[in-house]
Image 1 (tube, rainbow, N blue to C red):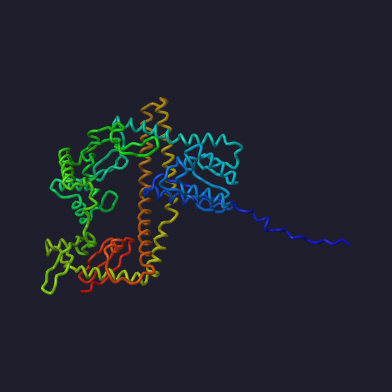
Image 2 (cartoon, rainbow, N blue to C red; image 1 turned 60 degrees about the horizontal axis):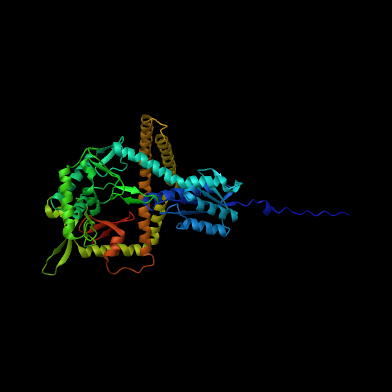
Length: 520
């Protein structure tokens, strides 16, 4: 009699193995803006890979502050190849051949190596998948184009820029403090212009760049980027010829290896007189620069202002809660013993204008120790939740928005590149070129403004997160503080606001505000 035995199907074989996908991205500089751009790329690829049910996210590899022309100095790329060799990755996605490598030999070598490891590469921009290629011809052609793309863009851009230098139509993308761009023209911002005039007047009156910066900070005036003023910032304003209405174009240049240098005469420079409305006269500008030059000779350190810093940790950081002025350090001489006090400068000048009285140096230090010891004791329930909250602000939505702006700006640049090539080849009338190019420049300015708005928001959150991580690391597992140290105070405190002789508020760099009582 026949006997039938049912052999159950192997369901494990029916489960389709997911493709392990990794992404590679790169930015060419290590500036804050580029690093945030890198975060946007990372957010984009993580979201893109995880949205495909057939793919398994295998990580993201990246390099920052490096060139794409050589692979040897790119740790992220080398790490990617190493993990491919370990069999951890099946597919690599990258934005374009130029992001992967601008060197034809390196590009082909890398692709061949990955193919030998059964790893394919998808180049998004070129819509190229090395796993479906029957020959290397197309990749060789495209990578050669990528290698020459930098040279082509550079040369055509130089030609376009040189023409605008020569006819005085070059638009300054980031005007200095005191000016703004309006329809491609530099126009004066009245309230900022008054600050610039005061800076030049103070310089001629004998004030140092350090004193001028301190006074601006004390008055609560923000710099171009919305931050504090520094001696170097003041120095840069006094040295900038743009405040006279003139512009010197091509102060820097890019060499054949795409490295930027200060132009000391290696390339032509162009002086455009009367480019825009002046804030100060040539006479005042020249005299102020003479003062700086003479001061540099006398001090023997030229324009270096690093050694002229605050002598005390509290200097410039204690603010009056009543009038907003900065507190000044003083020594009070008493029969019972001398002591150091901090006094409101406005109160010192006019007691009727501000009623805030002095507080002692020892009182502030004791309050700081008390505050830090509280954080050391309770950082798990105070600082850790704040960190989670701040990290939540740095969400993917804003990063993905930034990536969208990056893509639109790149498309804008490509369109301008095509226009420039047509103009350089004589295939486009100058009038048509100027009209279309100006429209693209205006579009670029709008995109940059919108992108920078999001960038500043993300950057501010990231700064607070970094400061909070630093604070958590400093207080975790630490024994209670018994002695005050300037270095520890400066590392974590932005300002101290004096509410009264009994109460002060420590404003930490992470954004946290903590109130403490002063003990007499």
